[in-house]
Image (cartoon, rainbow, N blue to C red; front, side, top):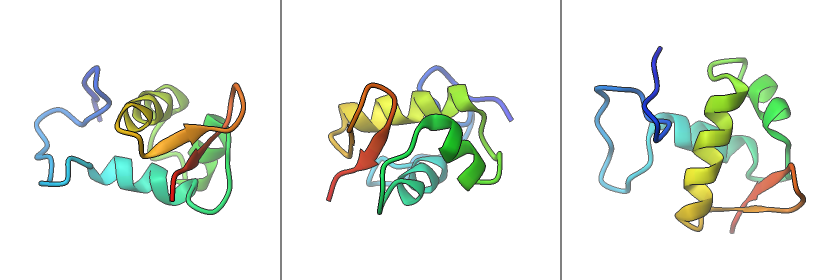
Length: 78
């Protein structure tokens, strides 16, 4: 699996809401409580590596869907 710089699988279609399946997977992992990227990787059963998770978290933060609760942990906004 290869991700582009935006953290999206190359050649994949982006749904109308702009969230990929990987974005939804990461959001589901941090929906109820905050986690560091390494914990998110374990929660999603290592489908993505830590760097890919960080890319997705940064993109979701720009879209105002997640927030940092510390220097290393994120949580989904409600």
